[in-house]
Length: 198
Image (cartoon, rainbow, N blue to C red; front, side, top):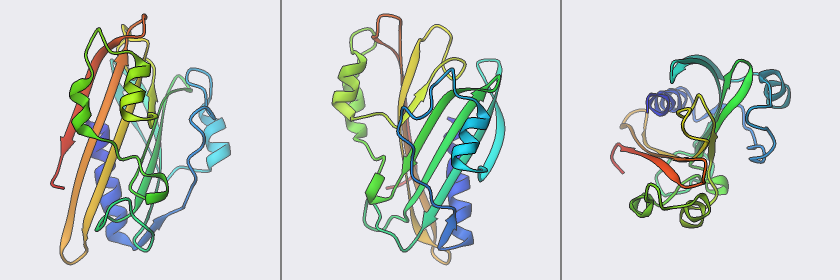
């Protein structure tokens, strides 16, 4: 999950630099941009220039990434002691959107999810509807090459909590889940990562 680790670094750096960092944004509706159709220019036209951009190699394909981030120490967090921050990343292959991912520790749009429920997801048995019933609406969507070509689509959940301060030091925790589905709509792969102290 190198992409998520990079996000941790981006968020932590922003929080160190200021109590309020980045330009605030509202997450577009999940269906505002269409995977496999929406182009890079359309996303930038709607959201403005990204805070960060880069490239990554995913399943032997070069994917372009753009990220929007915002942090505000004075806002209401999802959990006590957490510095509110949100991030939105879009992934493009051959100029078309192949993934979108949102995470937030603001109370108003928190992406927190119950990681203890992940063990209930069974490969070859659990359906997409059952995953969303268990964990709620996903905060990420992916198609190849962000997922293996043998998978049709994947949904995801991610949450990051940053605690502490400039003088006491920052403690970052992150949990991330990606669930892929086969052509029949059953779970084909579950990738869950949890890191840091809560």
